Structures are given as C-alpha cells and as structure tokens.
Image 1 (cartoon, rainbow, N blue to C red):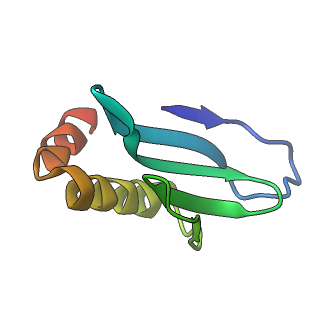
Image 2 (tube, one colour; image 1 turned 90 degrees about the horizontal axis):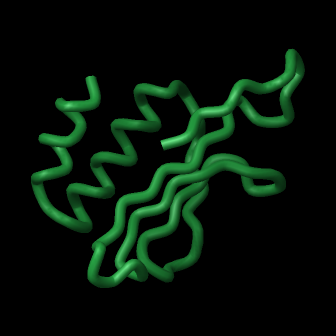
Length: 84
C-alpha cells in the first residue's frame, strides 16, 4: 500500500494505489488508485474503471476492503483488522 504526501494545493485530495490479487492469477484483482484525469477510481479484474467520491482515507479503505471481500471472500475483513 502506498500513500503519498501532496503539495499544499493538490489537484487531487489524496494519491493512493492499493491492489489485492490472486497469486495464481494476477488478472483476478481489485485495484484502487487515483491519478489525473480520473481522480479516485477502482477496477475489478479487467472491467472498466469505476469512479468514486473521495470522502476520507477511512471511507476509501472501507470501500476497498468491501470490494476485496465481494471479489475474494470474507478473509478481507481479517486483513483489515490486522492493519488497524
């Protein structure tokens, strides 16, 4: 997981890149990132990007783990608890 510091007047509220994937098939993945010109968005496997509204780091992480749980199962909640 990467979290970047931004200048005083950033174009985006935060810059991040988070990914969860199967070791045996890296095309099966949940990828969250933010970059110009799309802003905050995610990809599930090879599907089109889905834009989401940045509210806070906690809410974005909650959404990430929700999508990981939907894609890969309930172990995502266990990982989230470890990271707290």
